[in-house]
Length: 315
Length: 315
Picture 1 (cartoon, rainbow over the protein chains, first blue to last red):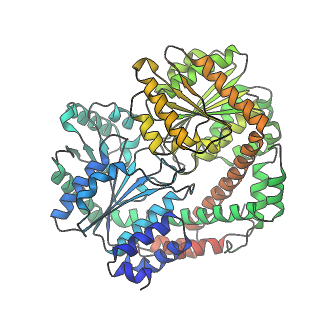
Picture 2: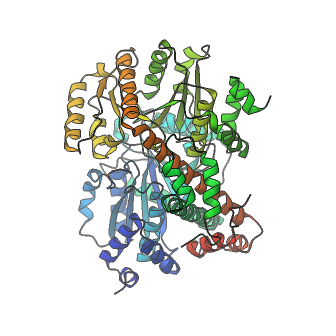
Picture 3: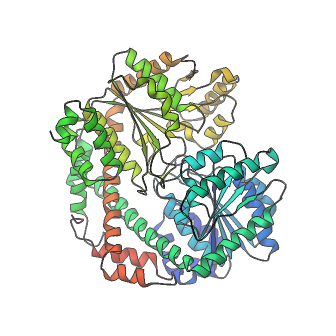
């Protein structure tokens, strides 16, 4: 059976293989996602983001349990951009998720950069489309909270959950960095550490200074490790989903997301073309390789590369 | 006087204005950098990276003092990609650098994303070129240690200093994530916390498992807050610079960097073009805006955008 057929018929190995192709930036993955595109658009995309150490993975694990208890299927993508060199994502944090391994309604995947500079955002988008076509009801995307240039979770998901820790200075940093604005739902995890109420007030005060929005992001408290507060958190996430649907915001978000994906695809193609021109037997490529003193002008070289590419963008 | 003239004659306001233009992704900045390009290539580019909390800013401050004591001029660029929304970089950490504000041999600048998704890497590269043309002997680039897709410090600097903390689990995470490989010099900061020796052995053991390299990254100990160990750290950095020059590695690194910069410039241009096509009165733009159910195929749209752009890449 074709990979597309396998994936649509629920073969988890076909799904895993397809995501690996996406991670490798194999053109087959792109063709596959394009083919499956009519089967997508049904999944609810939830982003989980926050600083390292806030317990995002444990929270994702606890949310998976609640989602499954409510009879929905779920796919988890844990994005770890910190390693463009070794390739694999760090597995340690994922091991605790192993209690779900026998549950066919749960699919968990870590994504690393695998040495493809700039390719992680594209690979993640493709993996989301693949899980969507595979028929997952919910897709959780977990990322670290540092704004990556291309991989802003708010441009990828319907609902963004910002995970904070009490009294860690984390909330203050988040407020200072303006990251508050991306959150549709706040959750203060590890409440048993104490000081959660102070953190809640900090966030509330900071939000009060911002512009009034139609959606007021709720602030939840949870202890993911103890599985406390997870049901209410999921309800709050569903509340935001309902708001998006009623307000028309969902369509607007998805249109914006589509535009950003198109722009990213065009940029990725341009990068590939540029590398091909520079590595190839071209005048500009030879000049770059023969240059020994680093004195070439990158802007002039870029113009030359732009002049060399075909009007249809090559390939 | 023109901005280029002002900058070359040492006018610090011209420099600051030029970097602001770069941060705003103003085409004037790009033109200026292209014009100044023949005056660049002399600065020694040192990257400082590490997890949040390892004391990178304090270390940068202490290094600035040592560099100034040795009669060299220095520019510091603190890159804070965490805030693509508010724009400004977090200023708090920079305040301690204020002791250098009256010293004309020190220029310090924080760079934030200012809402230009994907533009921070380009802006940082331009700021480096501008400081280089301005005549700085050393440029320190401080970034957080999470690998951003486009802003890998190892693709921007001559020498990368990886800042670790003792006994924080930080070294273990770094080893697991494969980030060791980007370091030319290690520094274990905050040695007074204790456990630095254990961290040193961890790194040493991990390096012993890797391939043998011509350059063995030294592991330094420092307390940036107490200004201890900073002279030896700077000597180690200069040691790596000398190695690069003797081995021919500097030319290779700079050639690789030039290639990546050209690729990034081409990709940025493609992104701008794609946005212009999609926002403009074009068939594909109208189709995107009129679409209400998110069911358009991004791959087909990307093809259409690629078909619309001119062979010279426009403007």
